[in-house]
Length: 142
Image (cartoon, rainbow, N blue to C red; front, side, top):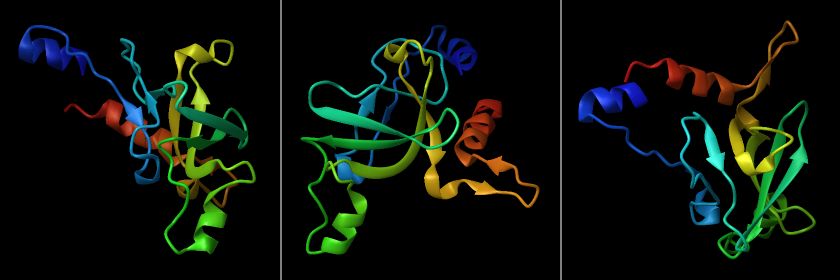
């Protein structure tokens, strides 16, 4: 994309990315530094949002959120609210993430897909759809 921007405009264009959901008032993490990394979702802006990462197999973590921008629950739907939050009050957004660098969390998180999208082939191979999506986007000539 950088080459396309330079070819089209004559200079680089700064891209930022964020991550969140309707229940988290959209933005829960933000890439606020210059990067060329595809799939980077950044870090939560302190101190308003807490991110809890629950091991989900391999290098993946289930991402959970708590903070001033996260809904306290679903209106008149106690069962849905109970299912959507863990015992500490973190919203289970349903997404997977991984550190760009396990030794340096300040480099941010990568979006690794939705938990519900992943599946296992008859051969026993696990397919992480989020990684496929990023790979297809990167291969697109735009």
